[in-house]
Amino acid sequence: MNALLILFGGCLSSEAFQPVLDGKNSVALSLEQAKKFPGVGKTALLASRGNFSFLNGVQIEQRDSWTKRSLLEKIAELQAGFDCVYFAFADCPFLDPALAGAIAERHLRYAAEYSYADGWPYGLAPEVLSNGTAGILAKILGEEDGPVERDMLFSVIQKDINAFDIETEISPVDLRCHRLNLCADSKRNLLLIKNLLDSGGGKIPASGDVQNVIEQQPEILRTLPAFYPIQVYGGCPQKCAFCPYPVFTDSSGRKDFMESEKFESLLDKIAAFSGDAVIDLSLWGELSLHPQKMKLIESVISHPELSLIIETSGLGWKAEELEECAGLSKNAAQRKTLPAPLSWIVSLDSADSQRYMEIRGQGFAEAGDCAKKLLSLFPNDCYVQAVRTAGAEDDTEKFYRYWKENAPNGEKNIIIQKYDDFCGKLEKKQASDISPVIRQSCWHIMRDMPVLIDGTVPLCREALKNELTLGNLFTDSIESIWKNGESYYREHCLKKYTGFCADCDEYYTYNF
Image 1 (cartoon, rainbow, N blue to C red):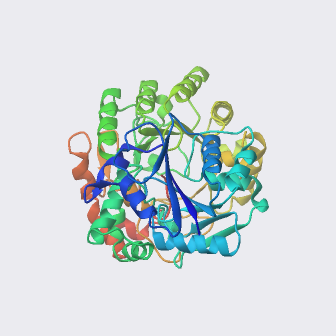
Image 2 (cartoon, rainbow, N blue to C red):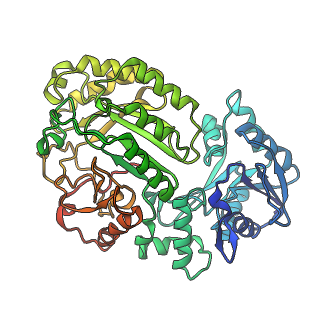
Image 3 (tube, rainbow, N blue to C red):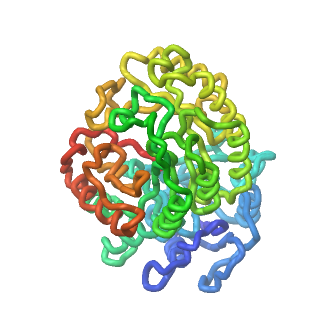
């Protein structure tokens, strides 16, 4: 076998160049591992502008920016005379030569055009293309183009998937449920890579070793928070039947809010600690009522490492405010590993005015108009949401059908949310039991850091009575607050669920 090895480094983050093992960064380690793939006859790095003088024995192709088309055309140009092409991103230091060899052997044995690994965490295996496939993919791309994403090859193949012979190397244990990315594209993933190295005694783990560590030391998977739901306003124009907030506070009478200066100070702390993160407004209360809401929105969007999600009732917004938000998002720098700069979730719960009144109260027409306005401004980043409850399946289906016909992307703009009884604080109305057969450690303790108006950080959103607080983000260091939650996550890893965690069924729901 005579194979071409292509590593793509056109969108590397600063973390990819930080020392990881023996003074080597992830790019150097990726190349070192990939060169061990069976049959490699030539190696090329396709990169953006930068200094790669620390790499030896590799052809470096650089340009200011790479698109899907330019990448495919370059692969097609370089692959002439080779039996197949190994393709991987250049920030994956755990690329496994044995796994790559198994994929290539299967690829050649069955004369496949595209082969990949399935069931392992991302970053352990390359994709394999036959000679000529890249050129075909460039033609399938047609007029469409755009930035190179990690699933680019498969996403293009999906446009005409039945036209390709595809082979898959399947993991003996499906590890996809852990949502791991073993690539140095963020501060969070770089810490995960270091944790895995430490757990293996400073040696690069093989794919089987990664599986063993995940099963035996799951606590190392908790790295840095990725999702920050923040309460910025105390009041809410509605008292929703599915929301516990009105039960614990007079939300209709509250007008307290977080000052924009304090909010901006939180953002600085979050960006410095997590590197990248998703900010969710508002944990409780309605953002549209905040007197400085546009300042808050702009302050998040102005941080290129942060993305903003606004959860709203759809009440209280002016059309010009929504249009200004669309302009801010359009002009914002695109996020590398995060959602769009600004996304919206409009909680409607019903497409029927009478049912809406029963669940949420007044405001059906205004909320619907707001949702339609947002869908026109943010067709790919706005979602209408309904909570699915027992006994209301017909209403949920009507909601789904209505918005499937009226949203720009149909069902892609719809969220049917699981009902949450907040650990027994509300009546149990779950429509069905979708919990895992075997309970897993809580995603929220692993990845979320909720913040209340006064800076208090509860263990999670379910801690409505401040049963468990980890600190105050205005007065305590964010590092110490995050560390204070570690013991609770370790308990979950040991299958110990105490306090309100014992009655919680939100542990398997995932945000970002």
